[in-house]
Image (cartoon, rainbow, N blue to C red; front, top):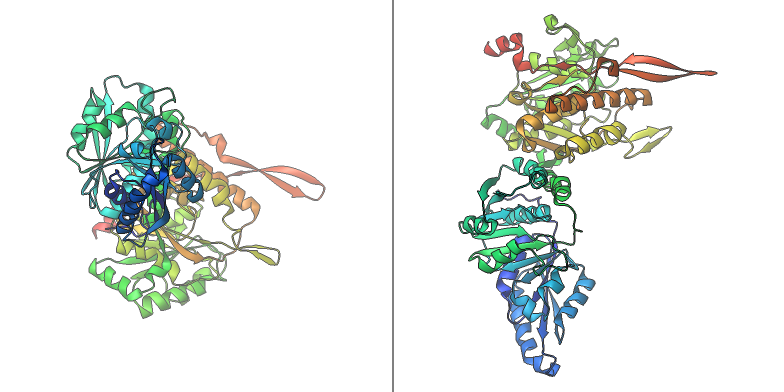
Length: 602
């Protein structure tokens, strides 16, 4: 199904129209790439220096007529003036300077003759991103091959290929060629791109060991109707400015070919492919797996989906001394999602031994209450929200489980149905995270976006550094999230502040990025924590990421001595240090717990 959110980063495409070029293929290529942007057509006529420019009048008139026949689409804008000159390449440069296109399409090799310019002049130092097109380009390609070996432009090539596939519903295959003289550094350069491809199941990965990369590409591409590849970096002194492989494929192939060369400055391939290719995956995931709660406000439709799939749904509410807000949270959700539309099959409160009236309020509203310290007593009890969430898997029954914090001041049913919507409409999603604006109260003033300090200063930087595939998660620490029991019961739960980070990494490693989605819940108002608590939270999250890295690399990093945190205390007239243990401990997957297995069998 075509994704309505995903669009190419090339949304302003300039197409020079000249007398001898394959203008149909150029325009077809532009339409395949752009979706909501603009295609600009500019006419260029070249006249020999030995002739008067007036000799170009007839060609200009014919070209104007041809351009207006091509411009039969709302996304096409025509520059009315057709340029007639002895040096049309200079006219094109002026147009590029005026329009600032994202991408320039050139027909290979006819444009270089029509523009009176040598390929080296145009391609050695490109003034903008360029795509060389050699037809025939099918209007509705069915099989698209993108060759990714050996080009520093692999990220951008893959991005365009995904956009074409999105707009045309074409099947996509990637081709990675290995030659006998492959060096370790070359294989290292492909590692970052391989991580991207492993998380794009819609791309069929083809790996071939060949002696001649040109023949290898021609052989595989012959079974497809469109090929994309990136140019190679070449110095100004080399004869073929796009590389011998790309030039040979353009010259010898019998299929449609597109070769990309961007203004990206040349760098070592391992640096380019390893560092930047991941953005293709993250951008695509963000576009396709980011939802808004308002999309799911039709509760009867959600109920119909739930019944069709024969699913049961549980809501677990973790709590600790939330008497001021817990009643409002329960009543708001009960009225909308149990009484009016029976979307929830059960609501439970998983309390962490509150000392106020939190449990009494929940019981008075008919909600079953569990104290996590008393659940699964043979396995002991640990402090922390993660412990409560882990044990809630044991006491709930639903096929889908969502968790919503009980300290929300502006509670609304969207905090629940917004999480359920993506799980009900997309069976591939296993885990859903909420995000929202988090106003921060400073004195008597409210800062609209001041909340989420640990998220921005600790969690997201760590994910960007060690798990860049997860860098599109807006609020990895949000307390509103959930998933399918079949996935959650296989995950390790950290007992404390690190639970959200640990679950996110675990889902990604076990099920892939495509199994995760996020939903905009609009705004969340809650009680903000003091700086010391945020410091301990950050400390726990860092431990969690380190533990995950230890598991990934099979090597210990942290020792027990690292789990104590020295906190700075202030008293009148003195400062001192206070040592507090902030240790993140793991609970095994609930599926491994015998009592849980027995309960599932009942």
